[in-house]
Image 1 (cartoon, rainbow, N blue to C red):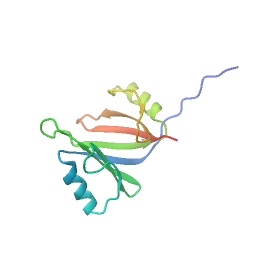
Image 2 (spheres, one colour):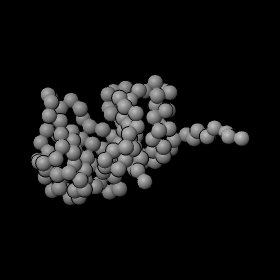
Image 3 (cartoon, rainbow, N blue to C red):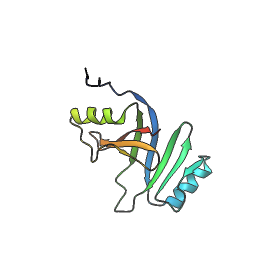
Image 4 (spheres, rainbow, N blue to C red):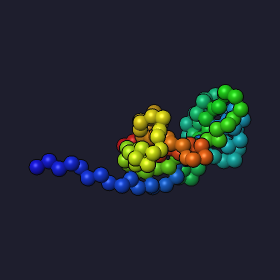
Length: 126
């Protein structure tokens, strides 16, 4: 007898990262390096840079079109990205894309909160 798998509630496990937009990656990287943030990925000439921030990350992304009206993104680790995606959809919170695997070794998707803040739910890939 084949029973359907039991759907488990996704568990929020912690804050993974905050991602901030910048117009000047070179200056931003120098600023965070001078403050002691260890550089993990990217750098002064890259469109995306990641620093260690304890057990979390501080990311920078280049915003080049118009005024910076996008503050950044909060990344929250969850136990099951796909279950969280289904929960968000069921609650009426659409995402621009289905969960995907990223080259930086995470599975993730984004939703917008009522104030327009981008919230990303992610999980490191095994």
